[in-house]
Structure formats: structure tokens, C-alpha cells
Image 1 (cartoon, one colour):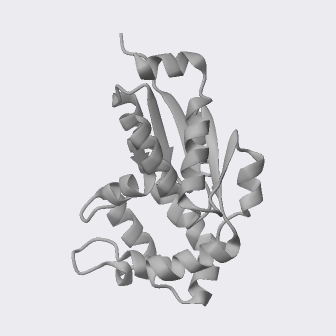
Image 2: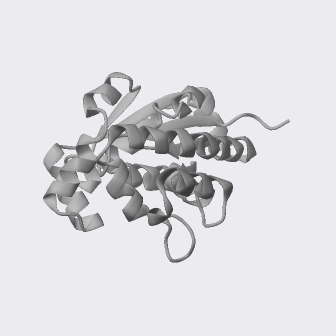
Length: 206
């Protein structure tokens, strides 16, 4: 009989460096799940979830491929908390269900889930421990401008649409400070990995 994986939830606000933590965990031997990629699959063109979202927000968010134009949708929901809540109510349940299916199917000793709304979507309830990745607000702005091509105003709007970083930190089992060098962040992840419960460590090496 296969054993349930030890589940690490990795979260933090936008552009704080969750992907770096997930990549490092993958290199250490964890099976990894990127919730945003799962959401993309769940909301792919022609899927029931995509059609429900388009029905809720209007044909103006339908892209040329028939699916959701995420930039057009983002321009709507990140300006209106009620519309963001509506989107979450439509997108979260099928995404969480798909994540749970992947965890159940994994044969790895450890599964790490990268989810920006780990707490809000209820995924944290499935985790054995939660790691919160942090950085400074200015680093978030700079990364969003560089990575996503946002101007400063749009970057700030995306950041301000999320709960304060401190709320996640208060609920964390471990905090990974990504305000320094990449090497410093990787060292923190490795230390946290080596501090996993002995029974989990034994399963990793067996």
C-alpha cells in the first residue's frame, strides 16, 4: 500500500520568489505542483471552467483562441475586489480538486505545492507544513515590472489586491526570506529540507 506524501505548501504574495523555492525543492527530490499551471489547464479554451468565467465576465475577455484573455480579465478583477472574489469562486474549486488529484497520484515521499492563494483556497488544510516566501515591497514592484511588463502603477495595483504579507507570515510554519541573493534563498530551502521530520527524511533516502 502506497503511503501518503508529506505535503509542503509554498506560498507568498506575488513576485516574492515562490518559483525559485519550488525549483530548489524539485532539485532536492520533491514532486512539485505549480497551482498557477494547474489553473491554466483547468481554464484552458473550451473547458467548462473557462466558459463559466467568460459567461460571468463577458465576451470581452474571450481571446483569439476562444479561451480566456488573462490580461483582459486581470484588468477587470485587479481593479474590483468583488470581481476578484467572483473569479476566485469560479476558479478555485476545480483547481483545488485537480491539485488534490495530483497529490493523491504522486508516489514521491514529499510533494511541494506552489500556490499564491494557498490559505484562501483551502489548500493549506491539505499541507503538513506551510512555507511562506517573502521579499521587500520594492522588490515585488521591480520584479513585476521586469517579468510581466507592467508599469509601476499596475504593479502596485496587483500587489495591493492581495492580503498583507504579514498575514501569511503569521500562519507560516517556516519563512523563507528571498530579499537577498539567490544563493542565500537556496541555502534556506536546503536547511528547511534537512529539518523535515526524521520519518520523512528516511522515506526520501530509502
